[in-house]
Image 1: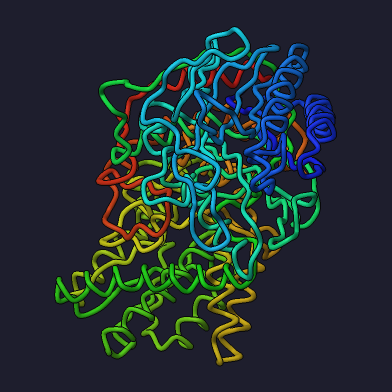
Image 2: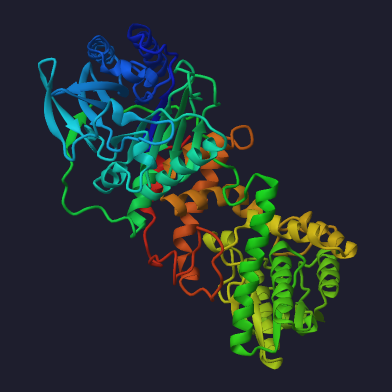
Length: 638
């Protein structure tokens, strides 16, 4: 399971009620198909060996004997299959009938997990035939072999510490305290559920929320296999609604009313990494549950699950609009509080005509509206210099006026040239000194205007720039409140677009759309033929790649080799492997070397699950070594 991915499957076979031979053959057929597709864990529905709807036929010995024989036959067929299989069946023990999930591996039945909660309401009356499972695990003799029998058995993969599987059965997960809770707290990373949940109006929505919610609460994978067509329709209809979820996200879901096998890959590294970070998830100090070893080979899993190209940006338009509105509100609320607390008379924003400063201006205007203050006290400062183009200058001026801010123009070329003279720098030398002198001069101007007007300098730098250290230390890196500090570049664009679409001022809308169409640039080098000469993404790499790297490295702690693998898959046809490797190498190197800029960040509001504030989400030594990460990535060199 390279990179922690393990392929799993939930299968709903065709069955006939009480036709054990027919059902057994179709279970075996499904196992063959799952093996061809590389599944390492395969889950079947509740009581699928006999059919869930046998009713009082469960009292007949002939059916129970046939079921025992079937379990042996199914187990024998796992002998040449590299998987752990769970099959639902009735099992008689000491004169009592139990609803169990039989775990099978390498030709053997290695455990019987019993159903704890038997529904006996509405259309369900399981207690008519079945007995609730015991409180603890004991061994029973099944066809001459001692086998663990009871709830919450942990099936531990040999050689793969992070792969621990536990089963529960249908109603167990609907109960107030599902058995899977204890199992997860003692190490289970994957929960399987053999289920027979009938279809009624709206139940599929509830079921989906329940399974995804349980996987989120337990920070685990969850494989839910449900009974389908073939069960008796005397009173009920079963839809075969199978679900594979991971930490609150549904990875794969079957169509209802079609018996099929669904596949996906659970990310065990992501699960264990999330548990490490989440201090609310407290493993139990004392292990009380029985652990049973099983064997699967460690192989490279072929991935069918997908990863979003823009993980910070919802793909659904309606969800994206809701997210944009919420983020703008969070940003504005943060600034509103800070302006009110400091009694700042003005808010000073450096306006370049680029995306980041545009967003900062829009957020500031929204904060002033919340405060009921006149937006003329927003001081928008444009500071043209050597690299300023007419396009960005005009956009900066026009949007400032349309927002209602007070526009101030402070040309800084003369001041920067004096500074060049003072430090002995040749103006024809367009090095980093040439660039950063301009950025620091602009910051000085903004700070001093804020002092003069009893105001506050509003930072414009975004999360992506902070991750890469793409900011001039004590230049655009510094402010009095950074409203964009946890907004990545790919999301900044959508926030500005949302604001453009939302405004009724056509002139402002046109300006904002032109800003969106302008290449990202610090404009610190002289233009070429009047156009921007310095494009950030040509120098540091595409922001859509860097935001992808940033998300998976910080949110889930993925190693570079894993990020490279999923990036190559996700951006196939857009970027070749050499390009992805180059910019991932750049990202890792810069992320480590530029931490000192993040260690002294101004305050700013957190808006998402990934942030770099040294006071909250990201605390890292400024002199941490990147060698281990680079070595991991080097193994992927193409």
